[in-house]
Length: 73
Image (tube, rainbow, N blue to C red; front, side, top):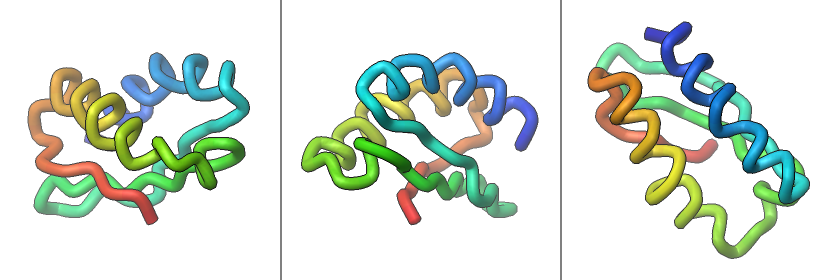
C-alpha cells in the first residue's frame, strides 16, 4: 500500500511545489491512516488543512481505496 500512496503523492507533489510547498509520507498505519508532513510553504499556510482534507485525502482515497484517513503530523 505504501508504494501506491507514494505514486499518488508523486502526482500531487508538483502542484504543491509550484506554491513553494511539499509533502512527505511519514507513516501508514495498519488501519489505513496515512500520516503526512506538510513542508515548506504548506507547513505554515492557513489553508493547509483544507489542502490536506479536500485535496490530498480525496485523491489518495481514489487512488488507494484502503486509505481511511489522512492526517498531518
